[in-house]
Every structure is written in structure tokens, then in C-alpha cells.
Image 1 (cartoon, one colour):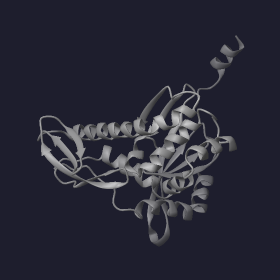
Image 2 (tube, helix red, strand yellow):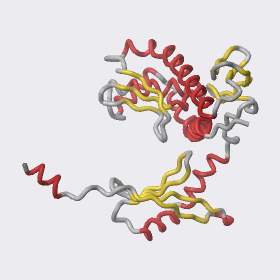
Image 3 (cartoon, rainbow, N blue to C red):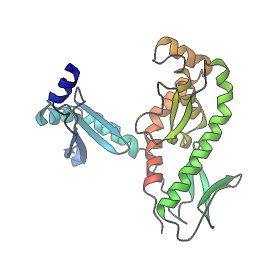
Image 4 (cartoon, rainbow, N blue to C red):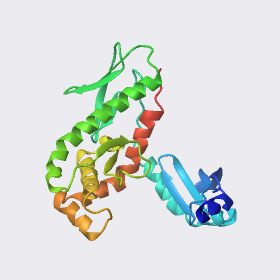
Length: 265
């Protein structure tokens, strides 16, 4: 009864409040920062991903304190934004124009052909995209995603038998998702999720993330015991972590660009 009364008289949690603030960086460069007031936030936080910069404010934080936080971290923000501009332009899926697609750390030649159904396949010569002349952008993106998912599952199918014998159980299921910040996760029920952008990077990095998440079947945390299990199965894990620091954001931004900004000409 007391818990029921508490729920009835407690105020509903506030919804997220969003707006955009413009920050002037070096040489007059201006950057739009999404400002979000989040009831769940406990501290002011500045983050950058493939969608841009975001400033998160707790409910009780003032806008003045948020602006001050932005100014204090402007150099960090500039460095993070330059990570994206330091790479080549993001790939796009443009019908009859795109000549390559990212796959397993390489730019693979792409040939366009007219066909009855939208379908992407690969062979020793490269990738072949068959599609009707009137195929929509959404149809092309869906075919690309299906191809990437099939390729990712093929890679997982090659690697998984190598590691399962030393684990207490197999994952309940494996899902491929477009993830904003994480590369993988293991839920309490044993379901394993992996970022589809892993397929765009080098194979060893993808395999490391799979091993990392499988080791969570042994240890749910990131304790020393957990890292010992990772080390025993994948000794070069530090090299892959360095690879993600250098290229991870570009990989995520590339996948989002390919699946969101396709354009038929």
C-alpha cells in the first residue's frame, strides 16, 4: 500500500528538454552543440559521436554552468571533432556512381547492374549490386544492410567454434545492431549484441570484440580476472583497442552515412 501511495503522489519524471547552442572555436569556427537536459543525468557531460556534439545537463544545472563547461572543454571538443575531418570523406551509397564500398578494412570495387530484385553480392572481382531501375533509396539501403548482416554472421560463424569449448555456455542469441557508442554488449539473459559497423573495419578488430563479449559469460565486469580471460584467448587485444581509438568513430559514422543518406541519381 505504501509503495502504491508513493507512486501516486510522486511527480512524474520530467521529459528530456533539447535545444541547440552555437559555440565559437578557434579562428571563428562555429559548432552547433545539442544541449539536452536529462532527468537521469547526475553531472554535466560533453560527448561527441558521428551525429555531432552533445552537452548533457542534470535538471538542477543552470544554463550558465553549462556554457562555462563548454568553454572550459572547447579544446577537447575541437580535438574530438577533428577526428572526423582527419579521415577521408564518409562513403555514400549512390546508384550508378559509388565505385567502392567499405568491407573488412578495405574499399572493395562495386559494380552496378540492373536486376529484378535489389541484391548485393560479392565474388573475387568485387561487389555486384543488382537493382531494378526504379528501386528506391530505402530499397538500396535495405539490400546493403542485409548484405552486411549476412557477411557479419558468416565471420561470426567462422570464429565462434574456436572459443565456445572454453566457455560455460553459448550466447542465447546474437544480434547485429547499429550502435551509437558501444561495439558490443551482453545482456543478463545471455543475448549478445554486436555493432554492424564492425564489419567495415579490419577483421581482427571484429574478432576481438566478439571475444571480449564472450568473456563476459565468465565475468560480467571488467575485473582483472576478466582481462585475464581476454588475454588468454586474444593476446593482441591491446592492438585492436588502439585501432578503435584511431578509427572507431569513422567506422560508425561511415555505416550511419551508408544506411541513412543513400541517394539515387
